[in-house]
Length: 231
Image (tube, rainbow, N blue to C red; front, side, top):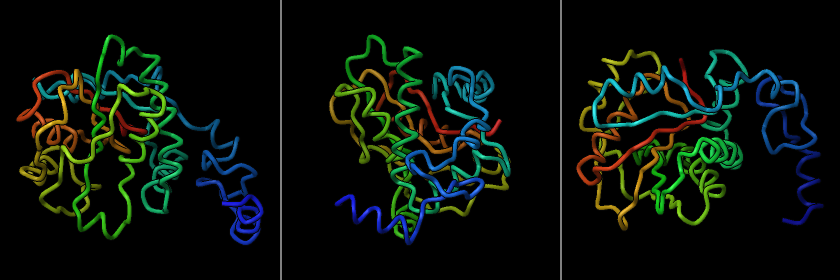
């Protein structure tokens, strides 16, 4: 798109901060400098509690990584909601690059010849309503950083059962409701690792069910990553 067209659109519909709603000079991150500084980042992107929760389910997920904590009514919640519900594809990819840098710096990708980035899928009914799947665009951002050895694959895992919003449910309720919700299909090639990508990880039940489905076609290490983790 020509720059003058972009400028004209921004004059009519200016980009605002997802949290405090001030007008942004540069809309890339979706947040103003003040709100960026208020995000509570995870130390080095690795969280022991997240990995501990995932580790309760043996042979499913090795480790969990996230970029930030999900704080109710905080900046991170506002950002995630903008990504999920307000045409946030570009924001998902932008923050996916940051997440990719974290994974690279942590050495998750060291000595790996090939990696599949698998976004947590939406049921087709919800995908039609929302228009896009945020984890897919986060995965694209991660791939930009990790390079050619990382492949985003949107056809290996599908959500075959639709369920209501899980926001208010605890782990056991979520886990029971999601039983049988995901189905895995043959992998393209023979990747060394799989990284499951989500926008926010809460109880870990969704990630665990995705990993359980993938175990029918993949026996090596599976990692989980997300923009935010609700501790």
